[in-house]
Amino acid sequence: MKKYIVGNWKMNQTLANIDDFFSSLKIKDSKCEAWIAPQTLHVAELLKRSEGAPFNLEVGVQNICEHESGAFTGETSAVTAKDLGAGFTLVGHSERRSLYNEDDDLLNKKLHSALKSGLTVIFCIGEQLIERQNGMTNAVLKNQLIEGLEGINANSFNDGQLLIAYEPVWAIGTGEVATPEQAQEAHAHIRAVLAVELRLENKTIPLLYGGSVKPSNAAGLLSQKDIDGALVGGASLKGEDFSKLCEIASL
Ligand code: 13P
Image (cartoon, rainbow, N blue to C red):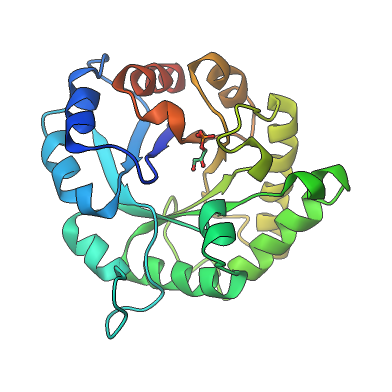
């Protein structure tokens, strides 16, 4: 399987920044899956610019509404994101969970809505620092998977249409990265929960690590057996760093 480098641009990047990003992409060809989720309003712009990029770039969104259409002022549906040309969406990023109070039940609805629209979903889970300190990491991850993926079975999605991102909350935007061993241990646990509890053992579900990934630490993480890629915030904003990450993931 190709490794994934997924840039989550969060609420960053002006059009001028996006120009800089594309003009500083360094590599001619990439053998990884290179994906970017800009702000939703920038999706069309990114799709246009990615046509001229030196390698294939998939464009997605960071969030969708759980409803397909209707009186939900300010929201964007999965159907509309798909119409716009987005290929994927994040669901359940820790910033959505904590800043916008998105709970497992809502995230489960979003997941179903996104899969139904044909979008690929990166479903994000991860423990808080206090939960890790109290030895609750595995239990938290298992619970987030069981609640978040309720009603999902092997027929709900195609191979590769659902990815799980493990993003320990204490490692997001803090510069404090999980060690490759810590990340591998969590990923092995996630793999086991998907197989045993959710009966998805025959599906291809790539597992991404996220939290302070940068060119200097990516190789150690990506060489782990159960780490299929990285979900990257800060280090995905600059074309040079994004290119370096893609090079590392293409090895
Ligand atoms: P950082 O890479 O900036 O820590 O952000 C991680 C993240 O939240 C990606 O979704």
